[in-house]
Amino acid sequence: MSQKITREQQKLQTRQNIIDAAFASLDATKSLSSVSLREVARVAGIAPTSFYRHFKDIDELGLTLVDEAGLTLRQLMRSARRRISSENGAISTSVETFVEFVLAHNNVFRLLLREHTGTSADFRAAVLREIQHFTDELTDYIVLKEQTTYSLAQMQADAMVKIVFSAGGELLDASDVQISDITERTKRQLYMVHFGATVLVNKPV
Image (tube, rainbow, N blue to C red; front, side, top):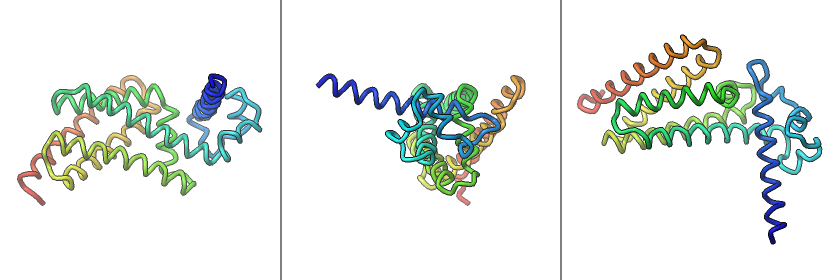
């Protein structure tokens, strides 16, 4: 019984090694479509033929990377929201957490940003799904905290997510001074969206 569990754990670890290797193979000049199966296998420390025990092809691996990137970011933002106690704290903590994520996992965020407008329809659709998950979770949070209507919360969340993702793209190649400027500007933009939404609660369009 223990041998079977060990084999399954080993299989899961190898699968994760492949995913990590694929992320490590991405950089500012290399997109998902240009990453080869052989390169991923080499970085993961497995034979190319072993790749097919875990993924049907490189495209299936690509979709898994998009899912992993989106899930990692959502889990991080959930953790950030649990640490806040006020709306000002919410925006500040969320932006700072997002910035830390982009800087520490630039290949992960670069994947989401690049494939959002990439040539693969499947990858574009996968990134859009992840962004929608992100927007939906933020919408639910706003409804809970602001006691506002779902439609207004959804508009607010949509605007906020677009601002944050745009800032993330700027962060990828930014200097330390630029990172600080982008962070503070993003906070101010989110405050503007938040307070604008507050006004609309009492004065609908």
